[in-house]
Length: 104
Image (cartoon, rainbow, N blue to C red; front, side, top):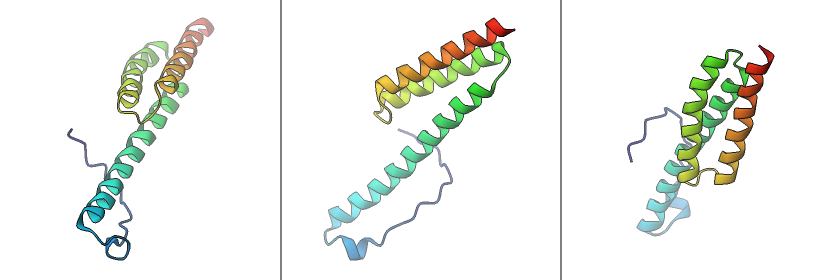
């Protein structure tokens, strides 16, 4: 899987003091990388949902909803969020978009 460099600085722990085995040091490095990646995707998802909820134009919101919905499904597929959370968010966002049309 190719992941973008998200330019987030991660606080590297001193693996020399914690781990005594080469494999344990590697696991610590892998965990830090995964935590940084998961934080990036979680924050990106929250920002996308937040930006969609701020929209007032229905056409824009529908286009953004397609992208956000896809993002939520991908994150649920990778087990970064639960499938129920993804479904609940998509449902709430769809209701929000329908309200935009009803008010206008």
